[in-house]
Length: 176
Image 1 (cartoon, rainbow, N blue to C red):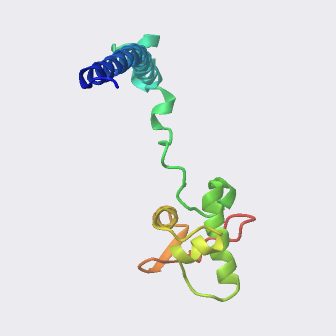
Image 2 (cartoon, rainbow, N blue to C red):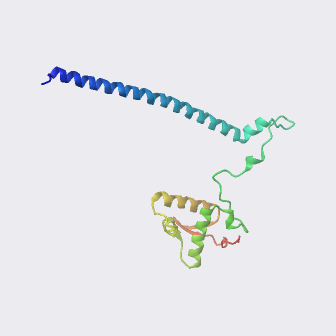
Image 3 (cartoon, rainbow, N blue to C red):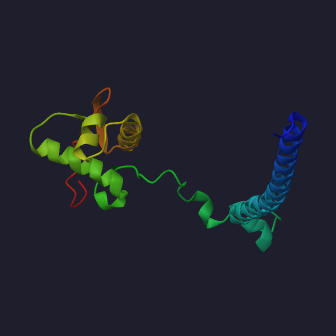
């Protein structure tokens, strides 16, 4: 029968081997982590530099274009639409095709509702029309689109949260 001291030594030796294996694994993971952090830092720097290059002021400065008074020339893209302003203001003759597809779908749903003589539509009802789950994220995304369309004159919010097509907005084929 083995002695108690012998059993303890055997378990201690097993534990020491496991500790050594884990330390080797930790060293390996630490080395991989350092490589990944260096790579990540390089991507952060690259993204920052691309952002600097793509800003209109940086483009002007790099081209070195100047007026006679020494002021930089403003690029033509400085007055371009911002990335989030994809919904143009409604004006007579503006076709629905000027809108992104998601916004056209909202207008189409409201036009169908109007054609059938039904009243305003809530964002939850819109979600159901589009076959979306009426979860808060989907409903709020539709609400954001409807509010943007309302602010730009495409829709009317007759009551809080209830949207209809503006009377001046025509069918999908064309403008007013």
